Image (cartoon, rainbow, N blue to C red):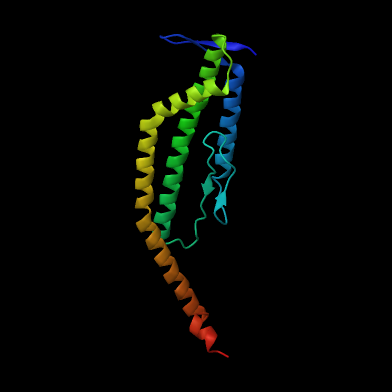
Length: 180
């Protein structure tokens, strides 16, 4: 395995080409998966997990006669999905790079990459990421709570629309029950 040398002001770091190559492949797969979701769909479609964020992208169906409330709800869902994808993509990218750097550092110092050594890395990574994770959680909860009202409006509008369709067709409960 060949190594690339990357110099920083503090110390030298080694990154394997294999790590860079795998990251490139994963990034290309992620873009291909997202490109497929740009096309119109006939129902909500859930894609395969993104190789870096590990989240399944969703392509939401746009109703031909979508109401303002339904559009607001769908766009709200899309914003939350994009927020989640962006955060986890960045977080997992940082994790993958930090893990590769840590493993290389262990090997350079003549140490083995053991479960115990990696547990130290995981704890350190989580401690350093704590504030970022908490900020993500706060924003995620705010976004989800802000979705309640648009979701409620869309559900009510949908029920009204369904009731109007039933009345127009004469397929409501009372029409069906007493026609015999």
